Amino acid sequence: MRRRWSVLVNSNMGISLMYAPALILFAVFVAYPLLSGIQISFTNWNGYSQKYAYIGFENYGKLLTDVRIKRALLNTLVYGFGSAILQNGFGLMYALLLNLKFRSRIWVRTIVYLPVIVAQLIMGYIWYFLVQYDGGAINDALTAFGLEPVDWMAHGTRAVWIITGINAFQFVGTSMIIYLAGIQGIPPSLQEAATIDGANAWRRFSRITLPLLIPAITTSFMLNLIGGLELFAIVISLTSGGPGFATHSMSSLINYFYFENQNAGYAAAIGLVTFLLVVAVSLVMMKLFRKKEVEYG
View 1: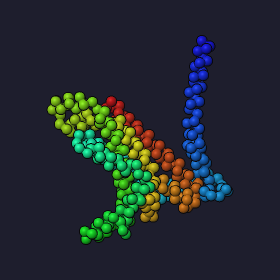
View 2: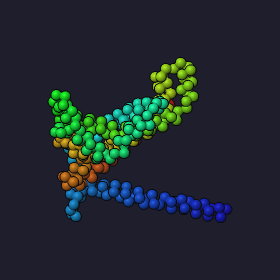
View 3: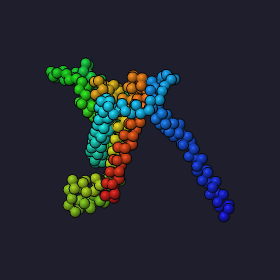
View 4: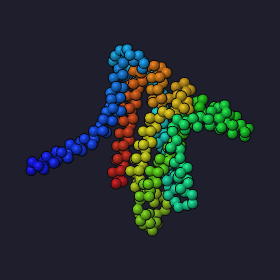
């Protein structure tokens, strides 16, 4: 009995030691920066000086009255939910199409997925040269047809939706792959039985395919939602948050206050609020999707 207990203890210690590298990396790159950020959010540090003072909840009080924060918060929700809805809608349509057997479907899958491997910053600059007013490819095409050029990014609301669409376009391939795997995991016998019973294509999709895709929808939507809520690089490369502060996300606003405004304490407070926002929205949406999985499970 004593020997068996000794073996069990040694085995558990061995397993625990295997966790050590992951725990060390987590502590260095996640836990420590998070705790440091919380500490900085209670100071007036400018990000460079070795001197700073603790100012309590002053930074958090400013968040409640700062119109720039309110605008960035609304934009962040649009980027998150808007991108997720567009990506999942088009991703599901692409998956249904590419699940059919036709020539060159492998090439189509590759083309749809290709933007995913491009860095977001690079994708933003590519679209910048397409939508800019002077010399932009879209305006050059309009001028060639005798139409007036459009300053696409001049109006904040329109620019926000353009950024949302670009983000959705870039990562629609991710949703397509997830849904394609989910569709191909559905037993063909279910579709065949429904066809024999006289169910048309829409009824087969709504009664069989869609309910069985709920786990895939959960995975895809949550990945896209979190990515949209953290949107940064495309905003910086396309508009730098302009015109004014009209297209800033919470993430790009952190960059502005830290590096351009030299207000690291305020930037840290925004960062913590952004982190809590992403966690809260993710937990709520995950709970809703899990409820759907139980209903159709």
